[in-house]
Length: 71
Image (tube, rainbow, N blue to C red):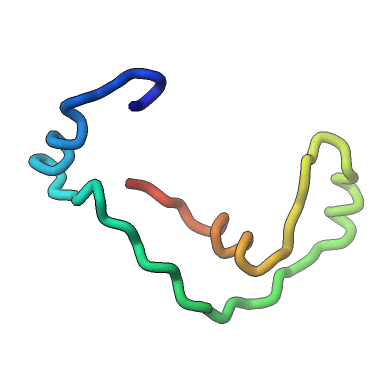
């Protein structure tokens, strides 16, 4: 289902044209070393809390949001 629509030919099309296995699952990523975050306190103070639901400097959130993820 995509966008609320059932697409019965999508998986076969992906297998035939892209060569991707729709049932493949990536193994969990091993731990990795990353640089410490660079925190610009003046910039963060200027942003304040208005219009921002959250900010995170947690290692795994930084890794997850530092690169794109596509099919």
